[in-house]
Length: 296
Ligand code: SAM
Image 1 (tube, rainbow, N blue to C red):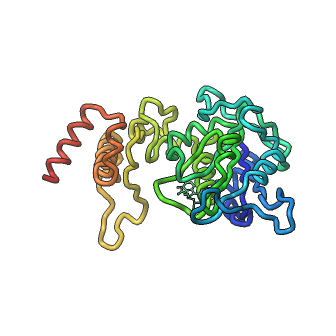
Image 2 (image 1 turned 60 degrees about the horizontal axis):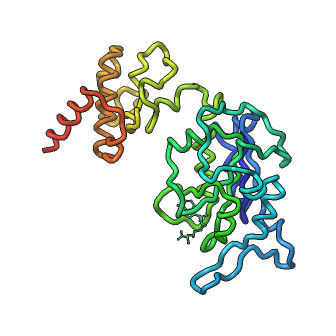
Image 3 (image 1 turned 45 degrees about the vertical axis):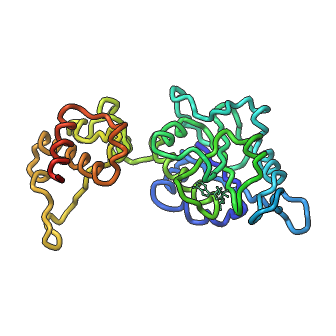
């Protein structure tokens, strides 16, 4: 999968992709990331990328022409030219491309390409959207700054406005990095353990889990839309706190039940909103009632 980032601060990304899983994925050519300096697509002496807003008001707005020029250099035309759907979600049945792209910009911009405008006004990013995006071949990010981007860029070129949360950042760069990090770790072969992403917070339901881990029953892990359970490693005792005994007795059924209960407890405490969408069985519902009545 390839990620292109159009930004006025390409140096922002120095070092960001040089660690851990993403560094390895790039080294193994499973993922390519390229930044594109918006100022390279200006034609005046001052390399102007912004201008005052029509109608008055605070701040500056990113001009449309340099962004259009940057996208054209990446082979990205308007939506009408690309025939792309305005609703940007990828077809989940499309196999994830295992393509390795050359590290230059001459990449096909076909049906598996989407242009995403990072914006506080966008659809909120979450794990299920990350799973959809992971089916694409290529994502081109347009990073806003100042008061944002001239709306015609959105209208003409962008398949989706995407927000990483209900708060306002000073630029789209951090948001692009977060989306890239989240999506790339869902690509085949990127995580050391193929199944890990199914078993964490917001993970897939037990029934959708494809892989057993170390012979442990798969239902031990599936998050099914809940938050993850707590994890422990050695030493068994730290600062007077012992690891829960149940994790050390080797009884997978007990461990499974304990972990499920912990998931429910954590989700109830920190993100009760997730319970509405989570896949819960009768036993889960009984546990939730019990936990609620404990709290009084
Ligand atoms: N005037 C805009 C508004 O109120 O929605 C805020 C502009 S913000 C200061 C500058 C840029 O940061 C935006 O154009 C966008 O690219 C990025 N940005 C800010 N908050 C974001 C968020 N929650 N998610 C994604 N991008 C964001």
